Image (cartoon, rainbow, N blue to C red; front, side):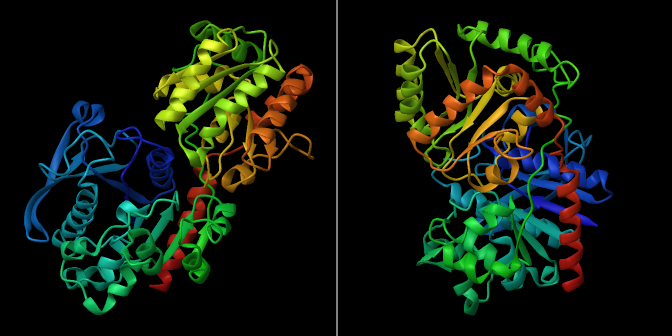
Length: 474
């Protein structure tokens, strides 16, 4: 079975968020299961592309409206990621360093999708499934069915995975002219709320769509930035498949990025050594419970709640808890978190930015991971923390609800709270402090956490079942 994954991100080539981790892992596990899975990514001028060798496997000319574009398809020579990696390169348009935030970003992603389809079409390929991830590839299902340029490919089934339904890629109708020879009677499929909406288009036109957790499938009908009714009426095509994590990369027993490797047989020694390294770097005591946050400092992650919740927790429990933050995003939130350093030097610190190696050390050295998310389609951080024996403190939403059971319940191993507000966060931190002071119980919970299986094997098998179903139906 030949599968092409289309995505804007793929770890370690280009990572902004969890999308990269998923696309960098799922195909690898699919290959291990016997599928011919490949990833097709826009070209980025980054460390990975500079350090690896690529073959030019295709060259062509395509149109973006009236613009004539030369494009190349590059294939990484060694399959270093465990699957075939292809890059779409368009000089002057798709050959830059950053993944997002360019003023012509819409042009970039439309051109990326057209170049991919032109390559597949002109090279005579007929993949069994094209698997699109988020709105950056959301026009592909429509173009396959309703563009005269791709009639040969019209029966290829498509899966569309929604990693975050808050971002639609919506744009003005002037971009309609960019699309190659479409059936103009079908433009309603492109529309939502008066805009050309790639995410809505994909949901309407794909053979099946998936969300990255079962709970998030339901939540999209309640909160999806204006697409709630669409998800309600198209719900019959939806399936929630919980993401896994790459247990080869996220494994404290072999992790080269942490200070001391450890497994379930030596959790205490391993975590203590990593905590000592982490606390020494940031000037914190190792004797107190260490609560960390790792992620983007944006509203959907509840990042605006961090500074007031941390300050209140430190005031209420001064000398009994430490906090350490790692992230970047909203400048006001960054400034608020930085300002706390001056007030609480002995019990708080922050690293503004993102550092992959440091993130690994955070998971290994922390006692608790805080995730006060307003929206969390799946969440990988809580699964990483469980893998490293770091107890997650999470809001009950999306994938957090599906992967973390409160330790007060039968078989529980985490801390959950209901509302994204300062009161609930502070109450949960207080519970964490009490739990830390009952170290035998915490050690038992750590063993439970680390024994959980959140690998991709199960999820990959669910995708194979889905692929077989839509292939049979096509």
